[in-house]
Image (cartoon, rainbow over all chains, first blue to last red; front, side, top):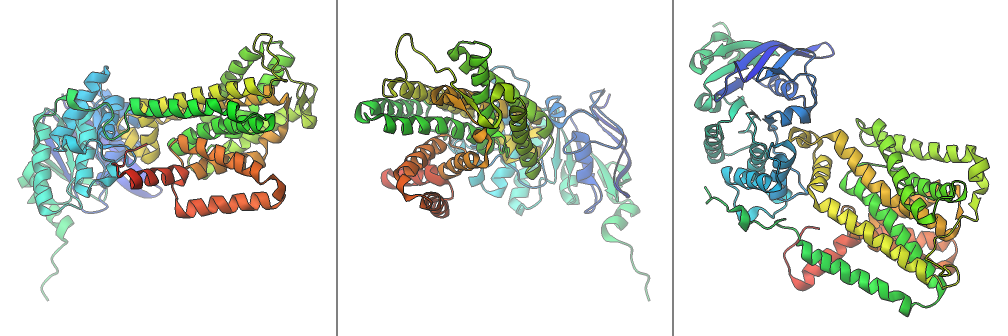
Length: 245
Length: 337
């Protein structure tokens, strides 16, 4: 049974169909990539799955066989589905350690304060934030460090599945390389990853399966190499060649 | 790649002033305040200090919902008013012991805060102001409409005072009331600081800083908002009850914009999200206003100019001013409040 099963999900804003009949499933332990040009509905898909800030208009989302559409975002998070956001996001007025503790305390399944502190400290260690920075306010961190902190707060929850929304956006090339290593490290902990990125090379490096969206609809899905050679995918990204005059 | 971090090596709150240091500073500050009646012997000056303590309780609790919670709760003074009238009604008509009525007034204000939280759970910004302001007006209208009990626009008079055995509370130069007010402020301050430093407090701040992100980490908007407003209401209601017992009357003036503006000024002048800032500003503004009593209409003008001046130079208020001065003099690391 798939860990995450998205069935015929649709979302409309007025007459605009942001998502139209999208279905896919993600198996436990895999890294699943979702690609598509800007405005293709990638982030809307994450929003509808996580219920933050809205769920789908129609269709079903199943987490380990249990329907989660219609549940509140915080309930879905506590069921083991964590997400990150496209922009670096943090609780600015809390310290780095307190940021991680929010994930461990509210989203985690560890009951005792000691276990929660363990989870928070371990999550910060996983993303490479040093103990000397634990007492800094999150707003003092660099863009890359805040992205890492956002990952750490998710890892501290001990999620079963982690949805990453364009983790490479706004990063330099060396930072992107580090991010790839981080995502592999997190996946190695047994956390299933669903990854949105419009940089195809990033997705090709990490994903075992790839879904391409265009204008809210599924364009292609399957093995990444096969998917990116699909003429419809090439057209969506590069457009059609003008006929020679 | 960093070396694994032994959890035992991590301080309980990295980056924050330690519990012990903060507790020691609070105890010293309150010990100094406790000595004041031996220096300030006239009853009028003691009265000014008592009023400053009451305002400090109300303002610091407002700082919890407004500053830490980011909830524009403009019905906070209605919770104070509910405490005033609850005490008056409970002692006068239900014959309940004043001390018990004071605690019960806090509970009633807390229940009222939970009731007002329900319609604002899904609202933001200006809409929360509208609903909470409407709540304050509603409470006032209910009180006015029940004039047989509340006295309507005339208010309630001859409300029962607090008591300590056979001690005469009225003719002791406000000595006993001073210490009761100080004890109330102490308990309220300890409660608020313990709350904001706890994991519940971190959740309140997280929701204020970024609502969607907080929800994605498992923080419940519903639970957190109820906790925030309920927690800010108890001591506000108790302060209202104390005020009624101390003044021996209840007036609908407590629902007016004038008092709300004064208390809000204290929260903003002190600097939001510190608790201590609101307390300090309550002392400064109350004593400052009394010192300028002879200036008539110039008093509010000068007070307003003072607030504007401080906010322009120190947007983080008096708390920010003190922290930067402290750092400047002692060159310490910038500990987070």
